[in-house]
Amino acid sequence: MAPSENPVQAMRRWLAQGLGRAVLHLELHDSAPFRDLILNACLYEAMFDPQTAPDRAPYLYDVLAASGEEDYFRRRILAALAAPADDLNVDELCGLLLEWARRGDAECRRALYALAGDLAAAGLSYPAYRLIDLDGWDGFVFAAERLGAAIIGGADEVHAGALNHITERLGEGEVAARLDELRARNPLIAAYLDELEADQARMDADRSERDSHLHLDYWQFTARLTPAERRWGLAVCRWARRNPDAPWPDIAADVLAETDPDVHGWPDRVSPRPRAAAAVAVVGS
Image (cartoon, rainbow, N blue to C red):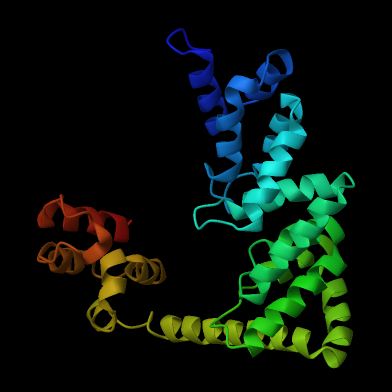
């Protein structure tokens, strides 16, 4: 604890940073002064990107267990998920339901399936991997059927997260063999897989179209870019990697003449010439 912090301030920081000090402190001290902080950390505070950082749910479960008031928090979390608000951290809370379900909590198992199932039926696949972590193939089939129903019902798109997750667990060959058998007799699974395959085909076609332009010279290539592609500059970087022998002095002169502050994705606060010069340094490196 920093000298300038009181225990509540320290606990807030420990929880935000995911530090084990929060667990140790709760094991040795009364948790009552920290109830609101702990509950808020569970319900709302998504401090890490779940795609790039470790899952916080096991850490938060350790916090709740160390508090000595696990059931107090469990009841409030279940109540919050019964009518979830827009700002509720649903995926992390599903992770907590998973922790309890793994330990034999039937009510939390039912709540996890109900919530993940409802979201999958709306075309949202992000809590489905919690079901896979709990029940493996059976959890995947449950989610995939509802995602397929969402597609049949007119959902705009369904992502491949659930399929990717079960493939990581069981292996590509095992999953492919099971799906071949299941697809033939389950129209919901077939709809789910058809959508994923169609989406992959669209992405492959888009990638092929983009790659077909990489052989063009710089001026032909940039003339084909959309305003968004020019703003972010990633397409130009891809072209540069494919064309290391391009006439970079001429390209630099062209980029330095650019006056649009949005081109190449540099912030408006940077004047055009330094921004463009930096873009050339990145693209030509």
